[in-house]
Amino acid sequence: MTAAHGDARAARERLHAAPRRELTITLTSLFCGLLLAAGWAVREEFYLTPERGLGYAFGILGLSCLVALLGYSVRKRSPGLTETGNVLSWFRVHMVLGIVGPTAILFHANFQLGSINSSVALWSMLLVAGSGYMGRFLYARVHRGLFGERRALAQLKRDAEEGFGVIERIAEIVPSLADDLDAHERWVFDRAPGLVAGVARFFTVGVRSRALKRRCITALRGSGREDLWFLENALENQLSIGVRVAQFGAWERLFSLWHAIHLPLAFLLFGAAAVHVLAVHLF
Image (cartoon, rainbow, N blue to C red; front, side):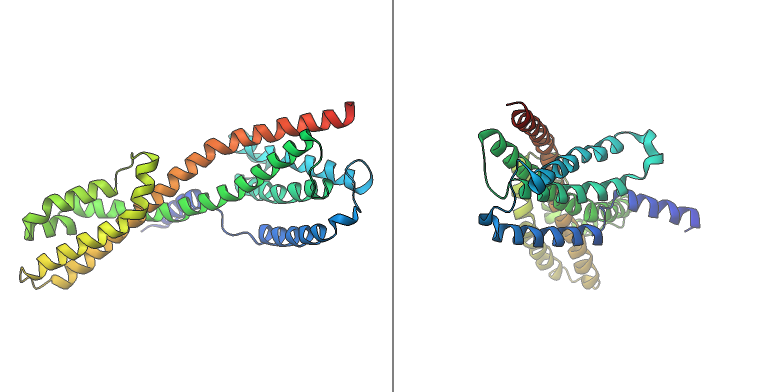
């Protein structure tokens, strides 16, 4: 492999891989978590009030953080803004703001519900914040593993095309398994099942793969092959890759579903926040 090819491969992996666990985000989460625990413990003392002083300042800080969150979306959709920093750096800032903003708003509200419009704004913010954490979890599940597993799957397909595929070799040795092997492979690698079918496959693919493996090994051991150990190991490897690809596919669908939900929640948040600010300052 040439240096250029190695650099290109590394670039592709960086492109597809999820952001690594960031120390800044972890420390920010820990610090804000401690602040929230302390604030919750003294909420009945009413040291903060939303209408004035530090409580009011927390409201301004929180709203500013929530508005600044939009910078990541703008940068991600605007390739021409490369001079403002790379997308990963904006993502880090987005995550930090998504932690600091809700923390400040909770202190602004003194951990209590108020009027209807403030309650709607608060719950909208909590929904978006929770959705953001869920999105990061799903994104990591999808992209950290799926890219590598798809590369392994592509290699298996190349081996099959060159006559070295383990499924094809087993089907030649035990023709009665050919249909089962082919049906299982098509079921595992089908990219277009519905959401329910994809989730069902997530939970059943391991059981079905192990059952197929047992049938194959039983049949192979009756064939008298000398390279049985190699075929068993290769079969186990291929079935394991199939299980992981199928399960990553389910995470991918859940991530797509999250993406469709998160944006409307964000619109709900900013709409509720705007109504809350106007209601407080105009009435």
